[in-house]
Image (cartoon, rainbow, N blue to C red; front, side, top):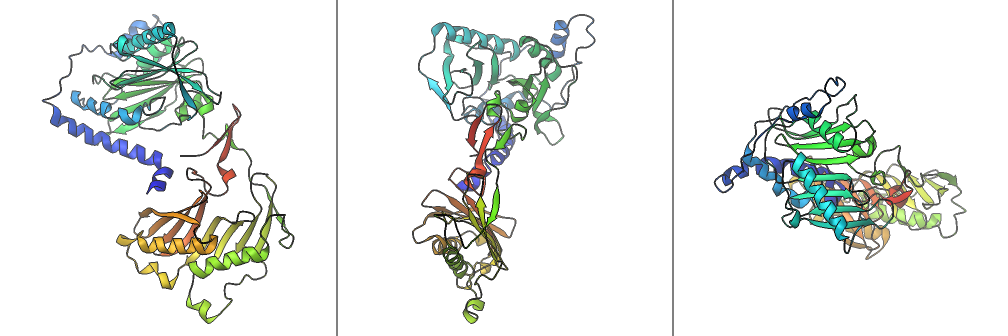
Length: 482
């Protein structure tokens, strides 16, 4: 299942986190006798905001309370339970969404003592005023991180041994980038517009007069927010994301623009999905060539035909082939040769007939992709296996046999089940000895498609270049991986 997890990690992380909310919410009730919560004096954030707004300023946003669920003071313990996955990366995951965090961050040894002291004070003051929490400054550790690729400025990450908060500051001027408070007092007094105004002033600006709705989170059965994300635009073009747990402000992130807000990141270099910013380094560019004159190093028509027949003889060995030798032979027009002009891919052979619609890399000989028309082997008949037993050794044996017949003996390193789903479908993943892997897709025991992935971590099927992107704001080239 490891590849299914890799390819759907964001979905599963989100689903598991949402499920965990309910489990921990009910589980903490059993711990009521063991836990105690300090009494807190609650002053509504709306009232505080009124104190900070200039008199007669009618342009200021009108605070709008959140439609929150009834607060269970002890349910906030669930946030402490989530810190292991929230605080895994340099930047905290302030909500249940999983944003990109660069792997090029590197922790540096030693931080200037004066800078550390200022950073502790900055974090302490912010948590005290906006999260209503007094941090023990003597217990705060300060780590300096540098982007080894040079696309992101240095940052300071602050936390403690209890790992119950994270604060990230820009090292250059100690400006706030992200903060998450795991140990909260559930007040139910959340007011995102009032909080947004106060934090905007802390950041040296105001809220934008025209706000659009940017909300997310999880709700209870009555439609009330348990956890809520509210993204607000600032007058200077920046955005802030505020996160509430049980009606209590507990996390914050500052974004330089709307696109960064939408992707939950603090730097333009971390944008990974917006089509205005992120492009393929080299889009596909093929033209038809002459199969009788393949480029140097490419397979000949005879070689690719042999490979195709080896595939068919195992994937679809039926009585028709025994009764009609040559039934799988390629006919005129069923094979086409294409030349790559992108410089990032290989030339390839395209085979299309009643059995398959298949692309084969001309030099490396791997199947780039294939649509299969209900292929099966009666000697390894998977159609007889009921849904409850799909994805077992019979499927492994069939996939290994097909792969080794096509790519050569000992070409397969391992075979694993990807998923069994919806009463009919099963996917099996053979990992090849050269590091690439495939997904074989079955419906009711017949082979319907084959997908190719260039490396173990690749998320995009097809050519390796289909996973190679550039962030046009920074020029950084990256591979779309898990």
